[in-house]
Amino acid sequence: MNFRYCIQVLFATWNVNSLNARLPRVTEWLEMCEPDVVCLQETKMADDAFPALGFKELGYEAVHKGEGRWNGVAILSRVGLEKPVFDFSPELDTQARIVGAKCGGVDVFSVYVPNGRALDDDHYQFKLRWFAELRQYLDSNCDPSSDLIIAGDWNVAPEDGDVWDIGAFEGFTHVSEPERKAVQSIKDWGLMDTLRARFPRQEGLFSYYDYQAGRFHKRQGMRIDYVLSTHSLAERAKVDLVDRNARKGTKPSDHAPVLTYFED
Image 1 (spheres, rainbow, N blue to C red):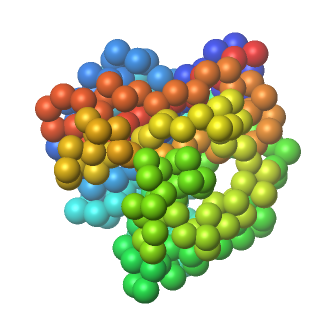
Image 2 (image 1 turned 180 degrees about the horizontal axis):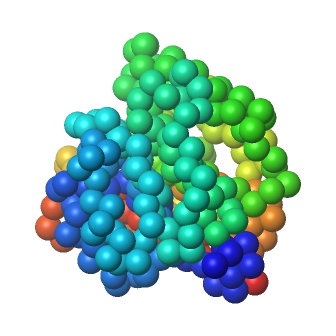
C-alpha cells in the first residue's frame, strides 16, 4: 500500500511516557482508533524489550530505537515500513531521540527533542545544538519537494497561545526565543505545522499536561507535540485534533495523542 496515493490515511504521534507502564492503554487506543501510521516517543525501552510481535498482531510493522530507561522512539505502520534510519549525526545520535522509515512511500521521522531543563543548564545548549543538527540533516539528506513527515514531542511551544498562561513560563524553557527560532528553522526548511495551518489562532489545543496541581482538569497545558509535513502532504490534511480522552483515566501518559487525517 502506498501512503502517498491512499485516499485516506490517519497519522498520529504520541509520547507514551513509558511503554512498559502504558502498553495496555496504547494497545486499546490502537484497536479503537486504528491509525495507519503512529510515531511514539519516550518508550523508555531497550530494543530487545520492544513488543514488536504484539504490534504485529495488531497489523503494524514497527521500528524502534531505544536505550533502556530513558528516551526511546518508534514508528508503527499499517501501510508498509521499509528503509529504517537509525544513524543521523553524532549530536542527534547521542541519545535515542530520532528514528526514521519510509511508510507507504512517505519518509517519516519520529522525534523526541531534548527537554532543555533550564535556560542556564548545559542541556539547554544541547537542545539547541540538536535542533541545528536536525536542520543540517534535512539540508543534506532530504528534499522539501518530497513527501515527508516529522512528528513527535518537540518540547517547544511555538507560540504564546500554545501554553495556558505565557506569564507562568517567563524565564523557563519551552517558550524561549532561541527554542522557538530553532523550531521555525525546521519549518523554514519546507515543513508546515498541520494543526496550526488549520487553526492558526485557536488556543487551548494542548497536548501535554503536567501531572502536578491538577493541570489536566484545569486545562492548564502546553502544545508541544505536533505533526510537521512537507507542503505536498499538508495540502491533503483534512482533520487535525488532540485526543484529550486518551489523557484521562487510570495511569495516563502526561501527553495526549495528536492526529492528522490525510485525504485526497
